[in-house]
Image (cartoon, rainbow, N blue to C red):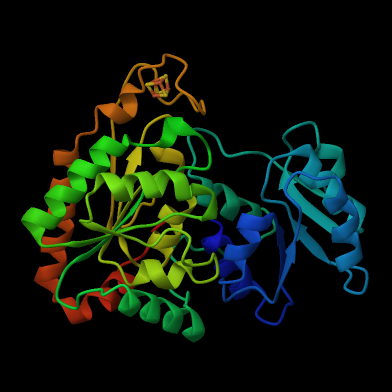
Length: 339
Ligand code: SF4
């Protein structure tokens, strides 16, 4: 969701050297962003990051620092690097650490817009539309070879499923439902379904693989964060909870179906014409809990495999109307406001 921010920042400062710092997951993805010159990898949540960031910036003094996370820790870390101007929201009692303490937008704002407001607060023009994202050729080659090695069929709709959620189980859809969905997509749509996941999700993805009885291809752990955008861009539809890969798929121009439970779709769901969101407006949602405090997990359980399958069919039909070959480019073209 920071893609429109970096794209707008690059537009505002075409000659600037843009560096971005983030934890292991974030920095892996940032390396695939064409607007960034240098990625500064940090250890997630460790105080040693203060020293490593300062060390990495020793010979590169920073003129402007935009702080996207709302934490006190992030602002303190940036201040400690000696950046000349720090811009961020004045949340978490950190206003005194910032040169420009930006007031948060009122109401329910999408996270991508919240990031853009920080640029606007410094007088920059911004755009939610990202039309200058490109996937590196070496990542494209890797994805192509991976799919060939796993017998991806040229004429079948390729559907990706990501059953995991780093945030917690409240964002996950039941595996039994994924299994039913896989059966339906393979048997009725003639789709080829790929199960995706990171190295920390192998137990979960392996279980779904076994449950699917050989109907899906398990690619979990076979790609990297740097090549994930390329792999997702090869799919026709990607289905996931509110996860990082969902947003990467949207950025890559792939049609997505987002299953929202405990989090607020208005704040984080991809918003483009190729992005569908399914959510149930329960009295208890959004609760933002990692584990359902009511223990029934109904926000996700009430989303049925039939509902998701029907959205997949709708997206595949839309794609067919446009034509298979032109589809990917057309999606990119239309990707305005995908965040
Ligand atoms: S409390 Fe409601 S919104 Fe939260 S996880 Fe449980 S069912 Fe979902």
